[in-house]
Image 1 (cartoon, one colour):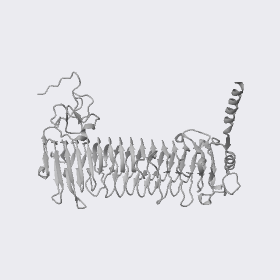
Image 2 (image 1 turned 90 degrees about the horizontal axis):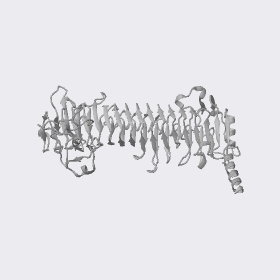
Image 3 (image 1 turned 45 degrees about the vertical axis):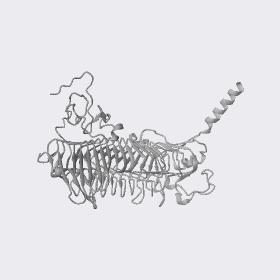
Image 4 (image 1 turned 30 degrees about the vertical axis):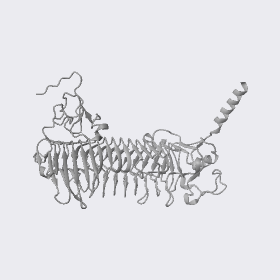
Length: 558
């Protein structure tokens, strides 16, 4: 037993001795520490308040003290620190970057050269903490101005770091490096590269809790996600991306695969020349998009991909584009407000509240359109918008089911629903179980359902089990209008018999209650508030299902 204890103590002590700590305050001391560090977990701590100028590093040569590898390929950057060791390199002060003073910073200045290149199975697992990387520039055509992790499946990364004024062909600051809690500022991949701040290649490249400011690239002004498999997918979480630009796609972020996840991020003030002012082709959830812009094309905030529980406010297409908020996006549970229409794609349980013209478009703004591509809108609420046309259908099919259009204002020559031809293709619109109530023209003329349909081509408008109140204009333009309900909608108004119910939910006395047309998708669906789509054995008209009265509540109907 005694021998076993002694053996265990020896093993424990040996394990403790495996990792070593080194301190450095100059480039020379740092390179000596890197040469000495041999073991997984060895830590090099750089002094606070110092600047290490890495432009003074000499070329590597065979036989130097950079591990057991032979001389590196000089095309990868002869002045950078090149290593194959799984070590920790950290600044002495761990104060969060946003709170640091200059005396607390540890600055690594590339002086126009790349700073770190992690190679092989160990090099790409190294960890960087509490450091500021400045002026890191990759050699011509190379990636990662500050840090590169070569090959795939990086497991190390950077935490609480700052990357400023770094540049490369791809990944202005980092390439294939997981980064958390850090700042990327004024980093660039030029006008031909991708990922102005960070480029994620292969798997395990997670970006979490970072801030990207003023970064630029051809695609993905701040972030580029590329060559990632579906499991695990690229992951961007709780990041703030602002004032980043792309000369092509994705002013804030570009994703080569639509399953790459973006969660809890804020995109503000980003711009792209082409599609996706903030984000191109990603799976976004719980994100906020504010004041993003597509300058020449579609999708001021998002283009392609999906959005769940996201908020879009004042996103625009500056010139001849569609989808100020998003274009060809599958959106669920999202809110849209201020400047920014939506175009094509699908929208389920979404709210469009107060959509207004952006002032830059070549035509009158629509709230919802499908210029040349399919559109599906289900269980949505469209209210308080002030636009030329609430719905503009052109050149493709559009299906609206259980939507409520209420208290919107259209221009005097505008329409509630407009159907036309686009590129020789006719618009075809189907509206089932929808409410049109309280809509009007700018001159206060009632326009609950003001229609226009082109007589050219095969444009078609069909309305089934829809409710309208006043202002049914140009009804002869509809091809089919079956089972209409002409009556007041009777919405919940403030504190009614159902405290906490949304304003545009139905009261029990509404003619829209149990008056909808049943289709099979409703069996497993929920309404805008998350209640079952079918209650009391029938479906209601509109985006909200009328709830049964609370237990003990008596309803009197005159």
